[in-house]
Image (cartoon, rainbow, N blue to C red; front, side, top):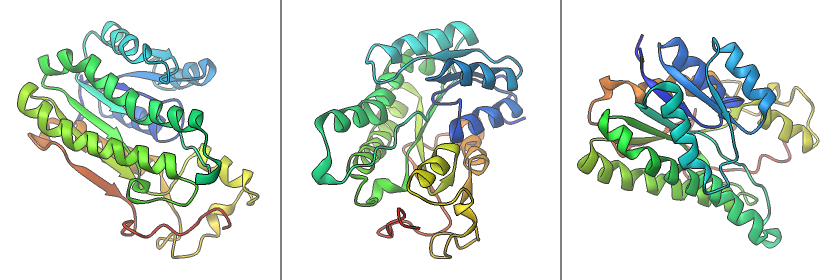
Length: 258
């Protein structure tokens, strides 16, 4: 088992990619703290993962990251890894963007990961720990309605490269990032149905969007996440890796009307 006895906090781990990461980590021998917004989903996920401890909190509150790290250290007896997966996908055309939505997007997608890293730094340094940020290929551009979301993921990418250098050199903590492509999560499926698509929309995608005949699954991102929490990666730090089935740079056709 590649993560045997590792103690890892995975934010946003009650659904989608985060839940798949938590599940895969447990399978690889890690002890994981589950985190999410909804008590029922957190309890359900914890039960599925052999009674893993969980916390329910809103990372848009700047006081929460430090509290969550403290809870993780208390529940797990220490911390060897942090996965900043929690995020919000906000969709507004630039002309319709509000200050509240913009600030909320950045609070969760950029500020919270930084505050979580900051709060856990002493403990991670003690254990030569690892941080993995979950971004998005939309960091390279994104559709027209993704101005806040895409730019927040771009900021997270810059933060990863900055801290991947600084924290590795000064504290022995490595920081890396995965940018997933289009993934079939519960939330993505719901968004597309809200856009008027059929429940089986993901089975009818043109090859330009899904050369393999389908989009990615959460478990495939989770498999990649294991690599970055494994000590076998050694000193690799400050890396951002795209997990997608075609080059995403500059290739973001509008998916709303599919």
